[in-house]
Length: 174
Image 1 (spheres, rainbow, N blue to C red):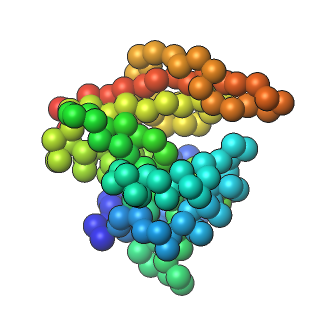
Image 2: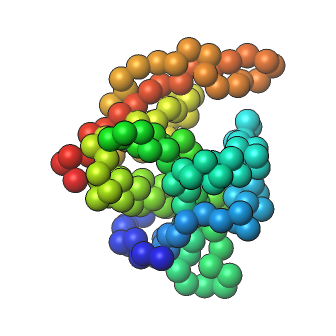
């Protein structure tokens, strides 16, 4: 596991505990219970356990981010990345709900971008719901720009569908 740099909290709020130092390692099948606990708590339309298992079977990069210190070193977040010839497609980046607003998502994204760049990726692409303003702010602050829209991409309440914004960032400036 590699240690991520400790960054300051992104905004003051009621959660005053300092952000923990993070450790990252490849996701394993025995992580899926903890991953699903977070996934189902933070999304109205979560990925299924099968989606994560299939990602592992397909050989996608799947990472878990945990606290380096403290009892149990609980899982704080995870990410799934698919490689395409010279780019990576960020399929899932999630932080445990109780840890939102502490800069953990940004630290995870920065680690993913550095790792992809070191391994030869020239860019990173992702989809995000237009209704997910916190994620859009995270990606824009990290240098991503909207390059397109996928119509009716995500499930939404009452059988409706929500578009996805396609965002991209070149990594050659890493």
